[in-house]
Image (cartoon, rainbow, N blue to C red; front, side):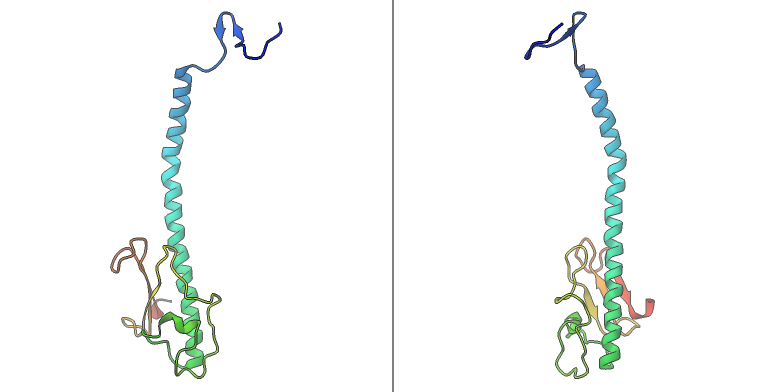
Length: 147
């Protein structure tokens, strides 16, 4: 039997293809898989941003320690983290830049890290505002004391 283009092949009087019920079952299975896997993937994404922020804060803390070894002090709050990439006024023993990038890094959510010196009970404190971008929200804090 030869099939001509544009014609639908019939088998025992029925058309070949999928029924509406079969299509709905497949769509329901796909929907269940997405419903179970989707939240886990989004959870891993948010966890990875938190871990990235913690690693960045560790790198900044190491750069601050190098600055301390060279200058004999930590940058002031006014000098901020910019002192790690550009020599601040009055720092003669500055051997930077202490960070690889030419600008101060941003956290994974696109906000600047907050730097305070002295920190609460520590020589300095580095904060990330977190995903909400507000102080006191779901951010992270890194002090010299909790290394």
